[in-house]
Length: 165
Image (tube, rainbow, N blue to C red; front, side, top):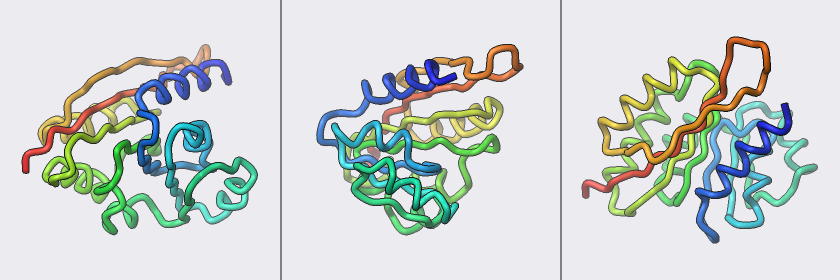
């Protein structure tokens, strides 16, 4: 359902400030990041090495890495981001990414936005509980039906960090 996906991307764009440094984890072929590249500097990653070729076709990304989201999170990639975009698999964020997002709220960087696109509602609820306990605050949540007739909803959640340092 391309219309609903376009609506998700439009909403994401509305939360990305011009000139922002964006890190997109679980990026697939970088479709979301490519739609932000005209307003932000986007670094995207996905562990599937075959996606790197597709990214060259979409263009516009500042960088694309074939490391897993956990590896980028452990390396500190989220510390300098103004906006983090995640679109994880149905099981939700991996523990290393969750830890890195908790660490973002403990840094002296200031306010960071997290844009979470979820196809697994139970995992999203789990991850949101963890994030809220670490001073992330839910700013916006909405659902999108990408597969009409299916018992499934795609959820877009936007969170803002509060630095505790």
